[in-house]
Length: 604
Image (tube, rainbow, N blue to C red):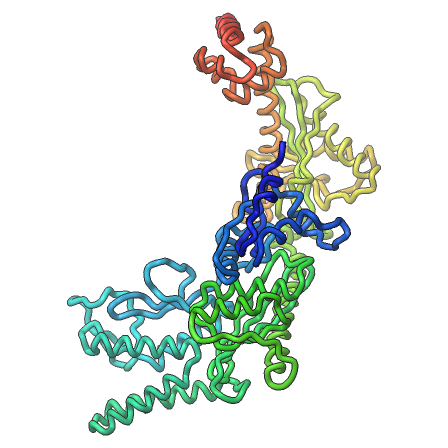
């Protein structure tokens, strides 16, 4: 019988479109686009093991089904692929990371719009500029914008008869739309100019303002002409502070690429009217094994999918295979867009600047990771201080004992590295040498088995051992460590008064309840208790099921597991009706009647 993948490979059309690979749970794991779907998709399953693309082999291994979406043109496939990646966030696709955390500038859809920053993009008819990876620069641009253009920053819903002009109007930071001091059309003109300023289109604004100033002067409106002149001067002063990178009023995005083993960074240098307007950087994941061209192509399609403005020129660090299709797609949204890869002159200088910044972003992230890795949490340092340890207890192990009515004694061992649980190091010890309730002997056995094993295997010992209990439990643990010749700092934590017992000190240490060191120990102690209790609870459930069903003829281990999985407990089985039991796989009507009768007798 053919698999869904084989069936799909036989029916893939020979047309442009998008292909979607899904796993056994129908999760989308990879999305791609192609001029011709049939040969492109089939190539994944025909590649030899030595083709060098380990990622492709992994994708094929995890693919359980293939879905294709046919498009009319390659351009439509470009857009659809970017949309599908953004929607499904497939596991194996190169994709932008952390774009949701970057803020946007929002222009509200109101009679008298507002302009402010936000981190939430809502489909309410508003316009958005961004995202901005340089938050400080974005706030600075907004601040300058509010100084030059009298855009309101209040949160009132206008027009309103209950709102009066405020100080912003008095200092000429707002035109007073709340009291109809400015017409709706004049205010919207101000908004459009403010948006152009934020986009870096200063030359257009200056031309409009100069023409408006001259018209006002001709009409002898000298005060209005003077206000426009002041706005022009402010704009020109702002433009002079920006670095001019190219001659002429050119709109251009220069994209630099930096990469390391597991991620890449694309740095976008926005040039508007020939000057550096804004800089943005975006991180991309799943880039290992991908070529520079693949990364840049993916970034361009995802970055410009929802951006508010596309410049007439986009400079790339390397040529991409689908440059013609991407250019045609972007040109459909406005003026013609050309894509270039400069190699000399001022254009290449700008590219080197963008590339250097992309590499610098990745280097800073690497250094921050290393600093975080080497940074010792405050709770760990507090423990070293309060317990007077020779070094910070970065690795702490905790032991607790749990018993099931004197039977099924278990010891739990949990581990914490730098204040965080390390669940892969958790262990459960079934007590072998102790019958009945004897916490001291149980702790002794767990300590002996754990640290004798670590010593024999040559594995590192913890920086601190925490035993749940008081002097008795601590004494048993110390005796076990002495027997095997292991020397590690050890303490006991008694729960009633949160007293800390240290070997050799008769008086306990009492730490403030709000101290970071005590909180760290409490978290470890509670985690050891939870881990042991959960294990005992599972044992109790198994014993309950066994004891209740042992005397029911025909109910073996397999049927016991089925009943527990279906009804959860013996109580659930007893509450279930005869029809429900009969419908359970492997039970049937006859067996259901036997189970009901058997449980009724056990109840009696």
